[in-house]
Image: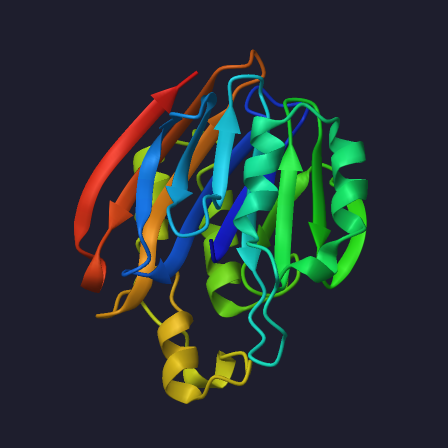
Amino acid sequence: MCLIVFAWRPSHQQPLVLAANRDEFYARPTLPLAAWEDAPRVYAGRDLEAGGTWLGINADGRFAALTNIRDPGQPLGRRSRGELVAHFLTGSMPIEEYLLEVEGRTGEYGGFNFLVGNRQTLHFISATDPTPRQLSEGIYGVSNAGLDTPWPKLVKAKKALSAQLQDPQPAQLFDFLADPDPAPEAELPDTGLGLVTETLLSSVFIASPAYGTRASTVLIVNADGRRQITERSFGPYGGRLGEVEVNL
């Protein structure tokens, strides 16, 4: 998952409104959003290469998502980052306890940003800042750097989310997640990948022959516990593959 923007409003009738894109190589085998056969109370897509996931919810109101940190010089992790989400969703450990456990072994993974919560609270931890942080009410975003790092795609997506919060609807949230326009060259971050790749990765929605946005996900959580999660999946060049909606 390479872009997540979300409004956390614990006092609101819709405490969490989230829109996210997962970017990955098209060749990496993946299952779309569904109840997991080996953990039927979990609803998420699944990475078939390592068994984890990038974003999901469960029937008990737990939620988790992650992005990687873009740093070509970082060492490869011994473990898959997707297991951080999967272990939280399949387990019952309290959030604070789980994040303290994650804090103690961030070095086992490649760089990551990890968002985790339930109906009452939302927390954030990063491999580059491994002290767990409880988030206060606000509009946030994370891509492949730290929380709210103002990369052009993140600034654009946060602004688009803010404009939809009076009456958030999946169709309108998906609209801005599909924005293919790259950032101007002068605004590109320099993460060591070169101008061509930085330009490709600077759009909200990425499309190319080998790598791009594999899934767009919208999650709306209501104060009464009702949740709607919708995922659209894509193939090479951004070709639409399907859509799944789950209501809990």
